[in-house]
Image (cartoon, rainbow, N blue to C red; front, side):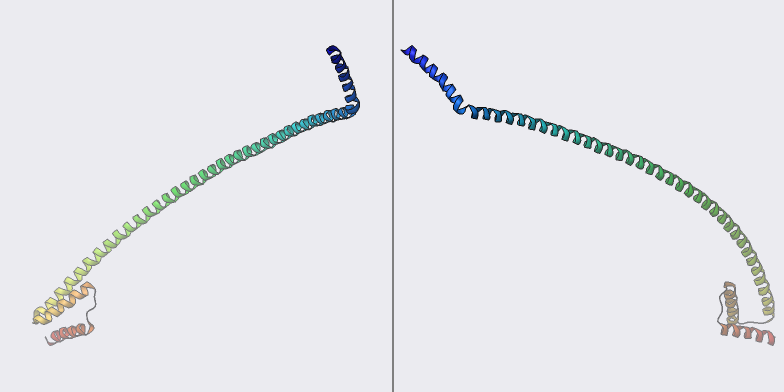
Length: 196
């Protein structure tokens, strides 16, 4: 009996599968078709997403390579420009140095010529001044001797003699004597000489 029941149950179960297939079969097939379609779409979407990611990676890698190339070119251009500027600066410094050296040499030569010319002028002036001093000394000595010989005959007071020597000293020094005193001393001398 047990045996019968089991078989009946299995038959019924077989029937249940058939019944289920009859009742839900269309829906299950529809669900299975939908699931298959969703799985296919999901696989396609996944593949599209992977392709898109790969495309973005490729584009980004290409853009990155382009940016790196541009940066490299700019760095090289800057290095070349920097090198050119350094060379230009070196040339400017060399030119300035040569020009400064040439100007310095010219200035040295001019200074040497000026110094030599000044030395010659000073020597000449010194020589002229020495001649003038000798001539003046001779003139003063002659004038003193003349006046002394003129005074030798005349007796001059000490005050008059002091004024005469003072005036002589002032003339030798090149400063003007007070005009009134000068005229007074000249008058005194003329009077004295005239009275003699």
